[in-house]
Length: 414
View 1 (tube, rainbow, N blue to C red):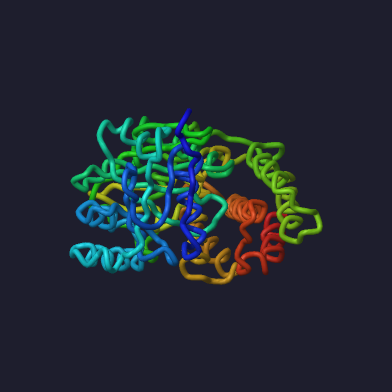
View 2 (cartoon, rainbow, N blue to C red):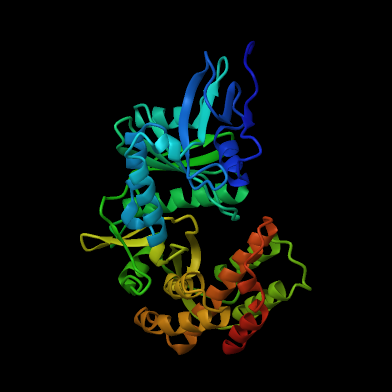
């Protein structure tokens, strides 16, 4: 089309790479659109006008330059965030209450049209929500599954929806998986609430999942809170049907073997070879186990309570073909390894201890509980190998002792 320029992203040398990544994913490759730090030029049509919080060298959040909408954006969902995030957003909210906010947050990101343009992410969301929108965007550090997560607000500052944007193979799979399971949760009568899908869009071959906001006032679980009741776990497991299945030649081991093979990890890698041996041990057992769906990231930071009901978000790791109760083991592991930063050995031991009672309540005898815990360790170990395959090194806290810990788990089931 005559007069249309190819999209350009020009953030300059000060901008952190994470800011460049999110801007490129959201606005790169759109003909006639340019994104840069600074002021719009005369004659340019401004498509998005954002402040970088706290600045371009330490980006954490992009908020509307409109102060009212920006305050609403940083306040939204505060009760579902951790303490440090709440404090940071509270400080940003205070700064945004005064005209001095444009001095405190001096880095302005503008997305502008130069000639005719293709629809932008904001256009797509405005169309599906039926009204103009302002955007807030989280800026995330590198992980294999990272993806832009947007708030869509109306001009008055009310949060209309959230959107997760796929941009590569791993994130695409996770966005689509989350859409599938959220539809199933919305259609089922479960004891757990979850974000309700509003729309599933496609842009450049990548999915965008749009969900409605959860109820205001959800209290996020604390680190010392117990995992939700086992009835919630059983309900989620039943989403696609709960069935009995043998371990030998079954879907549990097959799914993990396929993922392990896809990482391309050499057999000489101690981490990968230990996982392979654990999967062989699982495949040799004569157990028949209940198999269903899991949330995939059961942890206090993804769970909360509102008016007596459990709510869960971030379902992107939800998959079928896992043993009943896997979420219970994951909850204890995440608290110990991620939040409390215990060693891998301690975290695995802690998760086994905490899972004993709920797994027993789900019908597992001591041997069956060891099988579920071993499968969980294989799941986490494969995730970290997938991380490496995507170019993001796993934490040394995991990889340094992974082989020995996995072999100890293998010994407990053989």
